[in-house]
Length: 296
Image (tube, rainbow, N blue to C red; front, side):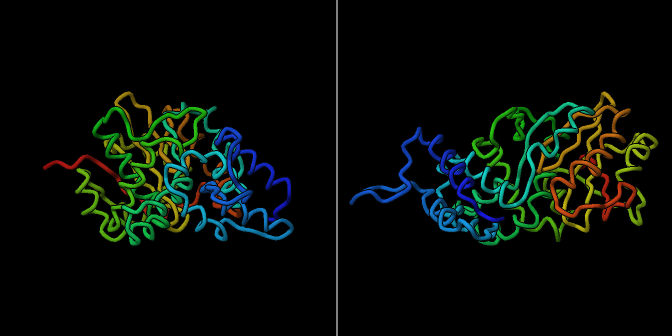
């Protein structure tokens, strides 16, 4: 991303808004205590006219204490979204086919994990690749156990970084470092049983029909786009479905709308999330698991 003065000005405005206009971003005298976000601001300001990526700056963001990251959540989110090329309201079209139940944006919680002294280096490394799977499994556990209040809050028109529950869920998910290599045992530790469907031909396009024809299936854990992402579907007693993506949150979808919802998710939303994503909705999932409550 080519950094312009306008970008710096917008970033500074978000910082000052968080600090009530009193953020100390430049040295003006001795014994002055500078804002904890000042190194990020100076790096951005010094990059005007040059290219800068999120990878170039995320280590500086990670040095900001967690409580300060929460205070500057709008500024950090603005910068991360800009440098990663993410659009706004990437999943907005899903609301026409569903009801939003909770909000989740794991990508904005990763810098907080990197700043947390209680999170180990191994857990931080794992979170970069496995956080979506683990958050999905925690969501499935809560769905099966009907846990209220949920760790996954609605947060309508609110910033995920500023909320405490979302970060605590991400922190718990990061501790489950063996989930990708020991999926069955890790699921059992959560009180869940997963069973992989071998040689599956099920895709986003065929998923709704399969669930219609197999009422005994309570939930799906879906791994797709190679093994880069995991999402879940949970069947409610009413016959509606809950869909969860750790980058978006959860949505309640009627059985009638499920196929159209999943098509919109794949064909409209994911290309906004990932540059170059063009997987057809008919492409079979990489891996597919049925999920049920473990009977001991």
